[in-house]
Length: 323
Ligand code: CP
Image 1 (tube, rainbow, N blue to C red):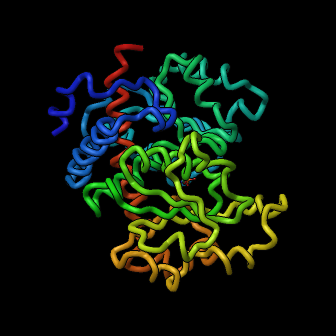
Image 2: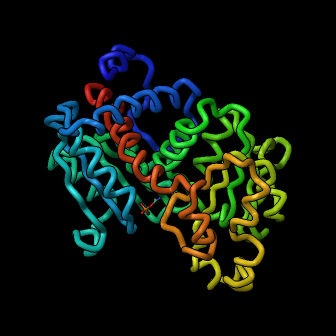
C-alpha cells in the first residue's frame, strides 16, 4: 500500500506542514490513505519500516505536551528515523538562544524534519522561512495544530466513512483553541457543517461574518441548540488562565451552561462521536461519563495520532530531495 502512495509523486506538494488551510480535499485523502497504510504496519508484531532510515527528526517543544510529542517520537521511530527531543526548559533556549540560532544548531546536527510547538502564533512560519529542514507545526499559540485536526478528521472518517454533510459541534474556548481553528478549516473543506459554541467571550470575533473566512460556520451560545442532531461533538479544554483573565465569571458557571453532559448528548444523533483533543479537565468541559462513555472516541484519537503522524512524516520525507 505504501508503494502505491509512493507512486503518486505529484499528490503531495508540501515541504512543511504549518496548517491545513491550504489543503485540497485530495491532499486530506492522501494523508488518510497513507495513515491507513501506517495502521497496517502498526498491527504487525514488529511495527517498524525503514522509510526514514538515515533521517533525523527533532521534536522542538517550547510548550508542554504529552500526546503530540510522544506520538511524534513513536511515529518517527516506527519509520526508523533518529529522534532528538529538545525542550525550551532543558536546552540553551533557557539561556536566551534565539529561535533562529536553535534552528541553525539543529540543522548543523543533521535535522531533516523539525516538529515544533511554540507558544507564539506564527513561530513555525518563521522557522519555515529560515530553516532548510521541513517544519511541522505541532501547535503554535492560538493559531493552528494541523496534525491534531488531521487525526481528528481521520478518526471521524474511520467511524462515519464520508465526512461530507456530517454535523459537528465544537464546544468551549474556541477563540483560544488552535485545535478548533485547524479543525474548522479541515471540516469545512471536507463538507462538514460546523457549529461552534461557547460563552461569547470565548468565541472568535466575526467568524461567521458574510464575506469572512467561514460564513457557513454557525455560531451558537446555547449548547442545547449546538448539539442538536450532531454527528460529532468536540469539547475543548477550558484554559484556566482565561478564567483568571476575567473572560469567565466562574468555572461553576461554565460547567452549568456549557459542559458536554450525558443529558445534553441525548439531543445529538444516537451514533454521535464524543471527541476531545486532550488534555481533558474532567467534569469541567466534559462530564466524566461522557469522556469515558461508549460514544467517546478520545482514546482512538490518541491511537490514530501515531498513524497520522507517521503518514505526515513519510509524506514530508518524500520532499527531502527538494530541500
Ligand atoms: N492535543 C494535544 O496537543 O495534546 P498535548 O498538549 O498533550 O500534546
